[in-house]
Image (cartoon, rainbow, N blue to C red; front, side, top):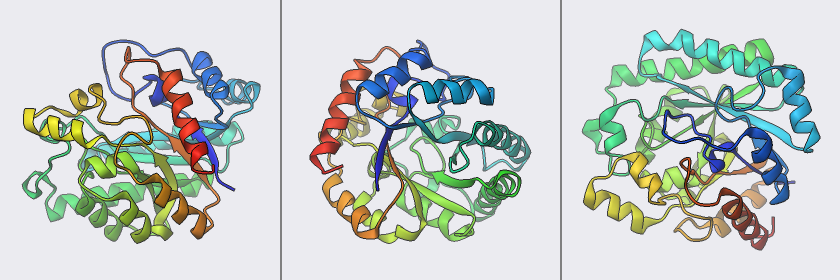
Length: 299
């Protein structure tokens, strides 16, 4: 049975160093429950309690499940791998010791940290990508993190492709998956990022069915994407303008995606993410609209 969750990034709790401040975790969790969600991801380290007992208490009080935690690592830099493993293990320990033994480490590049990739999100060309040697370093780092987490806590790791990082385009997603062990590293398919990166999420769902262990529902507004390309907006400006719009208002074919998930017998979670920069709009209203849209799909 598919269950529906949301994530703190939908309330402005993002992993980036940005101006403005999101709501506190207690208010965010309350609004998740009030808008009909059954689970959450952890958010950036420190957003929610960082001791297992406090974390478990906070989530149990709202009857919410914890599904995973986003862990950014600059995987193209070999010297960053050990620190990445440490962060992943620290995060995995928190979730495991709080009793969430089926939660994922949602591994990603350290998005937004490379100027060329951040400034050209949504319009990446091959010359902006990694060399063969750099790809091997990147893939080895991802496997190193996944192996450490699985070995110590038994938790699985999924990779989250993301605009503003080195794995954005369909070609880049494909390269990483081919370079990594399918038993060790799964894919967190994010519909909005895949579309903004130039891909068709429905095609990705079909192509990577067996590799998709975790799913993020995010929509993409091609009109904003086109405006961003014309004006050469960077990743953050595109998000601020609403490139990741409310579900059903962009061009992602969620109806077909749900049909594929149902046909596959997907028994995991769908996590709604509508990235909101601190101070943007009404996160609760967006969360409610997104939940109502998913209900219209039969979930």
